[in-house]
Image 1 (tube, rainbow, N blue to C red):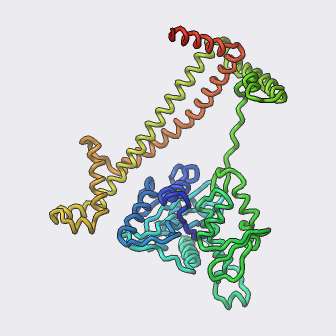
Image 2: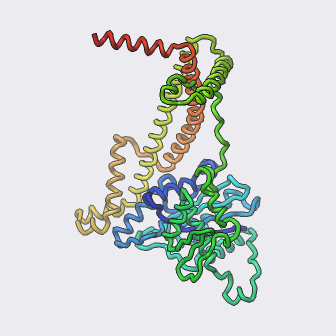
Image 3: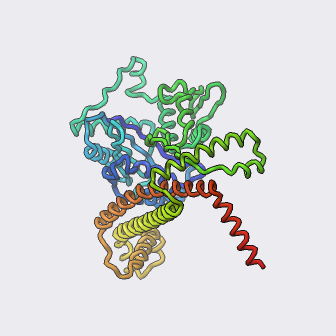
Length: 467
């Protein structure tokens, strides 16, 4: 059994098409949800650079047709959720791939990401609104969502899965036809589409609905009215999950706690912090009440610092200096190592793209050469020729080295990515350790007055030099 929904994706205000596509494809590919991208499959695109390929196709579409529509749909997302325990992630991914292929008829590139972070396995299928030949767009009709559901049910039956039993309709509903679509159904779909673009506030959410052609009426109850509607529809009349209070609650917390993100444990508050220079704060205009609070704070922090030093077997100042220095060096070494891994990942992605582009455009470029580098031929195949030349430039950077196969690069990419993630875990621990020792050393310096002595010595040295 699969519950299926089609969602439109639009360009957000203040962000480029490429940025919007990257946000949504990155979420779909999230390694924590797809078991390190184990359950990710693609058709006519590269999972590592799918957002760039989708965006490039839109540039080519604009160049070829000259058509640019306000509020244009940049991509579509199919959410396909399965009954808990009914399918394995592998089978769910295969079903998602087959659904996308049959729904788009193989004319649109797509990526299928199967998420396993919830009790129910579900697919996030994102397909490009632009066709592979960059001459047309996907046609989003009135009953396209219903057609998708029926196709998904058919594929589930073919795979031996159960299907959702349609609810019983009244005679009035039957007179309108099977699964008649109401204005409220359309509004719920639009709300899902807008929420899928991750607006940052309720006002931004309403603004995005306005861009979709809905008129907004504010007041005690927020309501909207779409094209062809005579009356406004209140959010509170849309049912569970769509009421105004539920929609507003999505934006009450930080974006990391929204519906489409993982519930992460709150970071633990640091056990100790730096001491407050009370005299300096009083000179800045703080009142005596602040001074009383600051003294209590400093007393607690001194005790916490002493406990930290005891737990880490720091018995003298020299040991504290050494451990502070060593932790700082370790942090910077790990930081440099992560940067090296990131650089290599970027190089691999660039080389993979170049190989794929080279293979795709080789025949066109050979024809271009045979034409004697004809200008007319170049204008007809400008995009392919440019891609081919760009791929050659990437190959030239290899300095004569043998160009590896895409499969070998994919394996190396996975290996380097795994190494980077391990380093990042060490990096987070090293950063905390460095900060702890630096704060402890700063507190000890202030208690012993060493920072004042150092400032005094520095002032004397500066004066001597000026003489």
